[in-house]
Image (cartoon, rainbow, N blue to C red; front, side):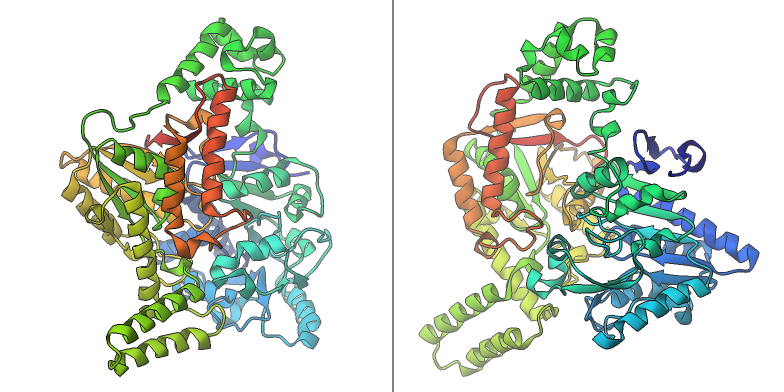
Length: 632
């Protein structure tokens, strides 16, 4: 049994306790609020142990999920003098084989993101070593367990959760009593790590990890999850049966475990997805819309054909009691969806429009049909490409372009031996580097140029000429790695200057919670902050959000639906095809092996299909948007 939630979970104004879970679960409005909550728990533990004059023993994870916690702890150390000198740390895992100094090593990750910025004593830092010889791995793992025991066990274990439900690298099938050991990595885990290694082929097949039993021995456990791509596994771990197929589900048996999630990761929890099933709720217009659409799809009836019995048989008697008239309820929801259908998304008068594209292909992939429609209807459309997207170009594509330049130069400047030799040196630098090594700045420039020319070609197909394109190359992205810097003042000012230059009437921004690498979210934060900066200057555009390549808005969230004709869908496909370096093998495929154009077309056709099932006008395809209301 998990702890008594009412007594043990601290709920803040930015969080809420969710019912119907087998692990006490706290939902936060934003990832930053979640990070502050967890960091405060860590800080309180450290301060309490300082007063007791004993060490605080922490179990630490890696990955993108805990980064916000580490940044907040670093801030506390710098600004509030939080002292880490009495802290002893044990990391969960490390790839094997792996040089501790490799850029892919968790040793490097922890140094760069935490240990180099606080005063944890080097001798108190313990991380599994990936450079242990095969014959010595078992002995090392046994010693790792003994060292934890020597310190009296972990006071607090922080965890993330993988899409396969793993904690640490305890993949499906891991036993509850398993200890630190060498494991084979699940294909899903390796696929999810592919971007960090610049390709799945470069991801190690093995890792050393603390076991499920090692984790459950901690006195307190906090497991964190961020983003919609974690929503399904959060549901499995927190609400469904305990199973070794989802190692995180074993936390249900721990008396001091706690799940902390953001709104996106909580999306599949019963009390979030269908709260009317688990008890009384406070009805809002959005919740009413969500419930009635859900009911329509559940019973297979168009909205206007729903009957009182349908509501009564599907836990929606409260809704009837509030409004009394079923006809009033269904008509209001139907009308809200119908009113959102817009064949002229910027109206009839000529408008200035900026489409913000986080990567150089998000514009055409995610809202290419609307982009084409806006251009065709005579609006002054600009596209702002916010990052170079250079790390998403494979080496073989760079080699192909270098070969073209080489042959082109030989054709017109055959005597320029110096330049031709430079091209040969560039090819050699690619062919001789180790798999997963970082590119040089020169090579990143070449790969960025590939993405830029592809974006220009795609925009031209969509009807936006080159002079209306802006390549912002925001500084936060310029690390040459998948992990990026936090948003900064320079990023915000670049976007603000663009808003001042153009003075748009309408903007479109990728407000995507499911982006597994965070670039969409960071770019959205830059735009939101910039809009706030220029608002006092009289620049206040209509602000619409679209989704990235992974998911679509749920029907109840859609506030503007732009119908696409077969001809527009074909032109959108042509624009996506101009991104040749991304077409055949998307760099961040995750678990979805479909090419971007297939994914985009399936998504827009499915949205149109849902609208048809709800009894709304039937269209070939639909792109969906949501107006910005103050948070993402």
